[in-house]
Structure formats: structure tokens, C-alpha cells
Image 1 (cartoon, rainbow, N blue to C red):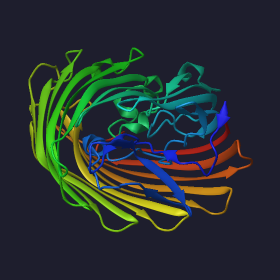
Image 2 (cartoon, helix red, strand yellow):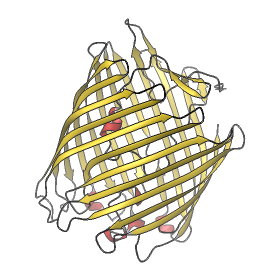
Image 3 (tube, rainbow, N blue to C red):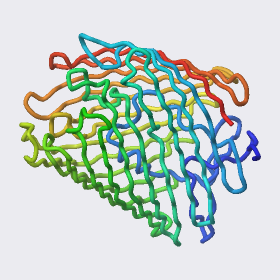
Image 4 (cartoon, rainbow, N blue to C red):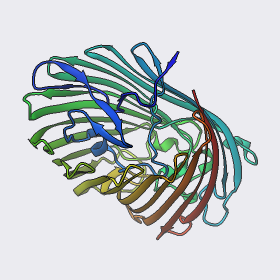
Length: 435
């Protein structure tokens, strides 16, 4: 098994054949050059997955996926193992009776990118682990990383067809801003979420591309708690992107979602949204993306909750990515989104987030993030809450294959409903071996 040289040409995370001026196709390559990233034939593109997210970005660490480091013929792969220990002073997100615990667990991840032929591409990433809790062994459970996925992409002339499956097991209730100790026994919060579907991308002309697709999400509780949130969501989307200039791309994106719950507590509903998208390469080092839409949420009276609210209004998402220098990158995200409710029809979340990743020296990295969320739940009484999230972590590369990291995170929630506040502090230490 040959190892890829550090000076190799790396297939990017978004690797895909792209159309050149003629009919010939090639793979999009990332070239490490003086610590900066240059993309061959780079054209500003609208990130449809970014615009489709209900939350702009993850709660805490946003370091991204490890680069591919192994090569077997045409297959490029990555493999790593990790052991993580953590002290959490409030695993149940309680305001008055927080439960503190220490946990430890192994974690392994594997991924590969395989260009089967010029027009067939398979990509997979799987991350699985187990976490043991010392004082509360009943909380111990298997975990699956949120970025676990399998993608199969086919190119037929000017049409790209992508089939995908996203799979995760959610064990951390702080990922949902609506949850607190007052909403249920959060030590039993474990959910299986699977999203499968397909997407079509037709390059009609050099400037114009048409997009469309469908996704099916199944969300199930793995315990006897929170089963009232079990649902099936069908999501359809369509739109187009047009390159106004080599650095500016604009378009229109519309979506329609059907929400159906397994239990008869939450109300079923439908969501509609349509609006413009924009991507601008402001400079060699700064990229801006934005989307806005008029969104309508209509809910039926199929559940037992007494919420007759519907939603109509604007939603949006704005992002800015900046390569400060060869060692430092930063990003800013601002957005307002509509999501499914917890004991309500829906919740809107206004999010502002800033993140910084920097290399202090050849072996030491630093990652930081601050985030603010303003959450409004429908119904009577509708909750209004604010969350403040802070993450700071550092990593040290001992050798080419071994690294360690330590991080601290703070979660603070302030609600207008009694018992729905919490403060959570976490300290994490991990050791990673790359192969």
C-alpha cells in the first residue's frame, strides 16, 4: 500500500469531473502551493448543500475532514483511529440539577475516493465509535459521525447524476438548540438519522446549469424517549445557476418539503421556499455566498399539541470565507432558518457564527469558534431563547502519524420559560493515529 507524498496533487473534497472549453473532462485538482490552495480551472460555484442546511454550520469544531493519505491504484483513501476522553459538567442540560460525568471512547474513520472510470465516481466516508460514561453507564452508546456518507456520481454527456446516502447517530442533545433539561430526559437522547436521495445537474451552456433533486430523511429515536419527534421528510428542489462573470454566479432555487410524523403528537406539515442565490469570488482569498427566499410553512391538525400556527416570511443565509495568509483561515456565517419544532409546529433560528483556524507553528494548530443563536418557537406559549456557544481547541502533531488535541467548549442558554436555561462546560482530550 503506497503512501501519497505530501507534495502530491490532492483530489479535493468536492472532487468531480468538470467541463472544459471542449468536450474533454478532467478531475478538479487542489495544488498545495506555498501553503495556499489554488484550484485548477476554478469557477465560483453555488454550494447547494450549504444553502439547504437548516443550520448554517456545526455547533462546535469545524476543522473539516482529514486529507486523503493513502493510495491503492486509482483509489485514494484515508484511515485514522482516535481515542477521546471528555469531562462534561452538564450532560442532561439541566438548569437546577446538572449531572456531571467523565467519558472515554475509541473512534475510527475510513474514507475513499474512487474514480471507477472517467464518468463514474464513488466516494465514501464512515466514522464509528463508542463512548463509555463512568458515572452513568446507561448513557453509553455507539456514535456515528455526521459526515458519514456514500456518494455515487455518474456523468452522462453534460448531465451529472449523484446518488447519496447520509447516515448518523446523534447522541449529543446540544446539537438541537430547542432542547433543554425541561423538554425531556436528555440522558436518553439518541437518534438515528438517515437521508438518501439523488441530484441532477445539467450544464445546458457554458454559463447556465440546471439543478434538481429529491431527498428522503428518516429520523428515529433509539430509546423510548423523544419518539414523538420521529418523522419522515420528503424534500424536492429545483433551480438554476448562471455565471454572470468568471467570478460571479447567480441563480434561483426553490424547494418543497413534506413532513410526516410517526406518532400523533406533532402536527404534520409542508414547507415551500423560493428565492435567489449568489456566489462571488471577491478576490483570490475571499469568497462570499448568499441565498434568500420567501418561505411558507403550513401545518395540519394531526397531532395532540395545541399549536395552530403557520409560518410565512423571509429566510436567508450569508457566508464569507477568507484565507488570511498561508497559516490562517477564517469564516463568518449569518442566517435565519425555519426548522421543525419540539412540542410546537416550527422554530425559527437566527444564527451568527465566526470561526478561525490557524497554524501557530509547524506542529501546533489552533481552532476557535463563537456562535449566537436566537430561537423562536411557535405556539402558545411560544418560547424565545438565546444560545451562546464558544469553542477553543488546539492540536499538536507529534510525528507524521501521531497527533493530540485538547479543547474547551461552553454552551449557555437563556430562555423566557422557567427551567429551560442551562450552562454546560466541556473539556476534551484526544489522541489520533493516521495510517
